Image (cartoon, rainbow, N blue to C red; front, top):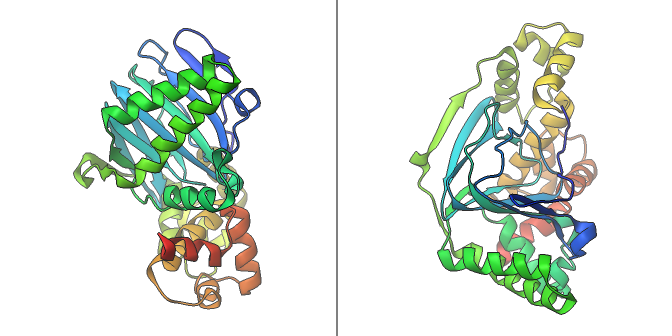
Length: 301
């Protein structure tokens, strides 16, 4: 199983995926439109580094599972819903083919936070920070935003270079408005406990995320030999145990930076890092921001 999944360029009646080498818009990776007749092919468990992924549902429904700490949470997006996954967040559509539906999708690259969508550095940073601050997965979105997104897609896909510039403006307006959306109530989410030996390891990681965690401990929690555990973990999740632990530590670090006044050094030691410098290096490599810049973005929002 691949660690990261990015669709290639494709253009047919029911499935249109415009890649970055085609549209050349800073900070935008794939921009896609799927119609109700597009085949609902299952998407395996994966993540996107430095990428916020957005799915704007037009009609029908689409189920996505987000996995964290041994718990798989199911989100069902229907018409006029927006579903968001954040950088390095493990997600999948499951093993069963999806219902056919219409939706627009886009992948936003946070590494371009100083030139996002061609904005100057000040406004680019503001927009990226606001998108990163959206802490729910499922939101209600207005029909006017769907209409603007459709216009943006058509201008960028079919128009001249001048039309593409106008399309980017429409797209910017849509993204700038997302901070005002209302989240879908939590009861529309369904938590499912993973029924596998690897699930015990994920739970162990969640419960001990602030302590040093060895692979031998995880293998024992899963009732596997060390070599079998590493192979089985990679087979089921598509990433190594060490990579998964890092993702979970970064998720906890984001929460601590947002909700506490603890110093960056204290957070580093709290999460089991040997030094604050190493913690800062891992954090920036994972999220494209330093811990200080990440915390500042929330104090300004």
